[in-house]
Length: 356
Image (cartoon, rainbow, N blue to C red):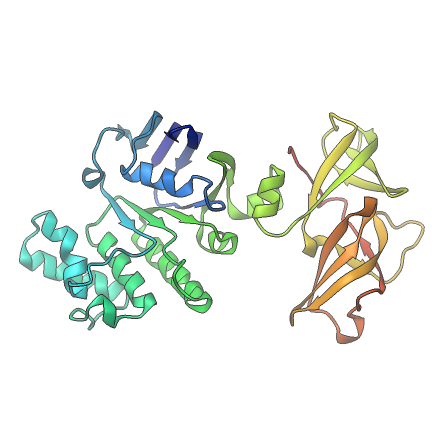
């Protein structure tokens, strides 16, 4: 089912938890609300679920406005951060709870519970209680309980935050597999940008109740619209350069960097300086520089961290700034130590101009 949010605002006292957010979530999409703690993502999810009423704006499921419809009539399934399982009920009874509340027959309930438990790989555990399950198994019970009622929309509020790192990776893959197989529209909340990129068709980044940017994971990563989006969606070097010139024919900006010139593609700047983003893995370490080489700078290695498949350097950069550079699959003899000089090249076609 398609979900549309038009100008949703929600206040708690003087605090605007959600500030005029508009989004479209297409049918069957895995859509993630991403942002730091307190950005409004859970409040927005709970507003979609019906646990909060928006102060203004309109929520549509398909062609139907659902602002005044109570939560249990919205055809949504909800997976909470703490799973909210009933400790005194077995796995079967936890999963069957929503069907019994809807007065589904015993025969149909038993069949649907057995089918969904098989889908989440919990067959044979029907008689266990939550205390007898691992964290990953409890998470699957919560997912099964949300899915067994055949909701039009699945809502998930940081469902993996209580799991260890290895289990989070396997469970996010499992959730994605089940979601795609069932084709259910899913709205997912997380503060983990890697998790968001791994599971999502579309991502909306929230900051202080406002929408910073929405798009595909790759689109946001390669073309962040703001400084906040660039820094939150993966590591990024944020640099500010004075503008020297602009060539309208080649759409090339010439900027100053500590007495050198930096060239990169972009629209004509509106001010005397410009702020850009460059990902650490896009900067290339070079052995030397010739007169024809552009955007080659020299710096001192402030810190060098060997991480196996990658070396991460902190290097002195232009205008007294430090840059992070990541070299993947390094050769052992080429790894630089702290205090060594290093030459690096900033690719002209990868600098992203930010709006703020």
